Image (cartoon, rainbow, N blue to C red):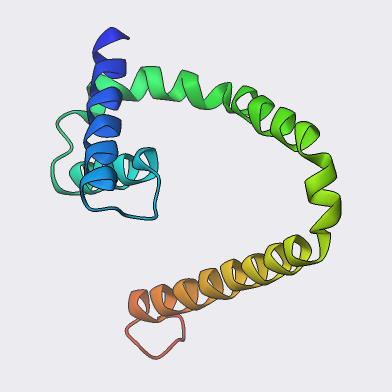
Length: 120
């Protein structure tokens, strides 16, 4: 478990360093997660090391939403004042995510079936 946390912390720290050094508008943990994904896509030797612990962490993922819920409660007055842009952003980003998923799924299905879109 400690080895897994150390690996995750290294990727998060590298992401933080890149975000800070390059003045990126993306949070460091997000960059670290992308780096971890890329690393696992190229070389999956650390997968057996982190798989057990990360599976357990994912089982308790809902606990990570507690701070976000508290933040919403603390800033309820601000959210109330800016509800329209928030709703528009939520609706548009949801629609964009669904459309992107559909397009990627369609492209992958075409690729899997020889490019003609029909089942072989």
